[in-house]
Length: 129
Length: 102
Length: 110
Image (tube, rainbow over all chains, first blue to last red; front, side):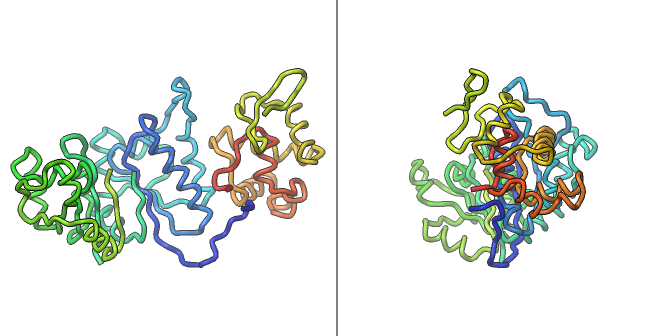
């Protein structure tokens, strides 16, 4: 395949990646991030949701260098360049963990649990980890 | 069409079920699979969680996963329907989307 | 598989991407470029350096669409377009320039 992979069918689906795991302890966060980057090539309506420990994925100031893990937290900041700009964070999950939107390294929309429920329910495809 | 939510972790080990119940829209189907089937058992510490959710959701558990764990004959939380693999496929096919909680 | 630079061996994968990107240097870049039939000009270096900065900031090699847009933003629209970038790197700016820059293959490139 060449550099310019395009999805020809023209059907745009509402796609959501739901992140529920903290980064670094398992491979889930990084794997989902790679899926997100790949999905950007297919011109779909991509949404990201960060729930539960998933909110830790986008906390500022991560430095996994001592673990010899790539600091992929920086990559979330590249998503805007990939036209992935619909990022949602579960308000209760933030609060339960003593965090606020100011602690996050990307611009997100913080929404309550009911709004999250509604949003997930409107998706055509949901990938979660 | 309602969504199908699957939960594959035991509530004794992870919070996948709680997380699912908090975010699934009313009227959705919740299907317990793999180690998630332990949540369907009546009389356990976590049974009240599912009992409380029975009014809002349609609840199901995957029979082969109960059987594999020697739990097939045990009493389940009222309202939980046992489905086989074909039933799983039907549930997925009849859903607007499938969300896995793991 | 390895590149030979000044008597030292620098490992690469089967497609020529560096295994350890911290081993990159400009001499090596010139050498990889040669294996790609590219003579490095100032314009080539501008893109390669841009990619290295992009990687440093975001920890990924950008897809070509993203690279084009980002180059346009940084270096101007006369450079942020496919024609300009493909003239410099005929086999694909993302793939080829990333290889020269010592970066991994862009995510999403199969």
